[in-house]
Length: 335
Image (cartoon, rainbow, N blue to C red; front, top):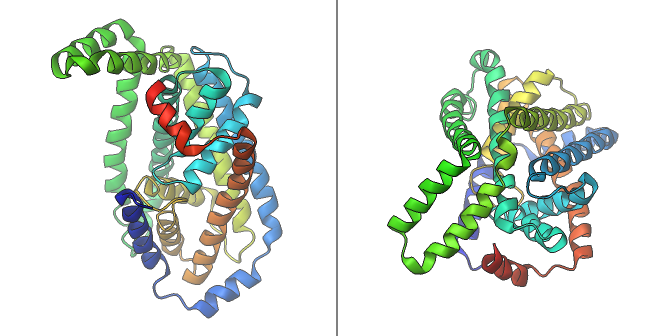
């Protein structure tokens, strides 16, 4: 509560919520909530947890060169990461699951964070692929909200950033000796002597976490798994859609999924409040869905994405008996 990042994120979330809900009649929104068939959330939640299991398998695959850890061991830790991202600011869940993995399996935090960053880069590439696959459809939309109208430009900028990061990681993984040599030269030239050993130690562990990308086959496997994960999440969008009186294509929901998840990279309050909802409503409006129905659907979808995994992750975290402040301080010392 005392950090400026928290208040900045809260302000951004409130701004996006204002954009999402302005002009809505509460009576119409309430009627859309009341008319929904919430039984459709059950298959949606089921397919979502299949996607979470797939994320745990992907993490297992990325961690193999560091330490082979079964998927069933990583699944609860993955859920804890979701809990941290949904409850704490600044995507703290990514650090949280690295800390839990170190406690359980002794994997260096810097090495596990390398695999987590690789996950996020591949996720970004897939989200952009979802947008690009639908660019012809996107060009047909009116984009009157502003979120949709400029998404082509944003997608191009995002593509450059994510592809550059992916290329850098792939090069570092394929040429470890050269990367290590360049890193040592950089650290020795630009950092004070008292920091060099610590920075190099953490950096070498980080490079160890990139080993799974040395093989083109392994990199392709991670990309395919990432695509399956996001298609499963889009399937949840599809199931929840059936609870409301509108219908768009699965490709339209892929586009919505890509746009809202790219938007959630913007700093916000925990749980991506506002940054998820405003672009989601805007995409559906561009497809001609009434705003009250689009808002009800997006808010229910957001809650269905947030609540179940947060409860499960919170349960696993409580079972760990982890103390946030103490463990974070320890993480800084032992990364």
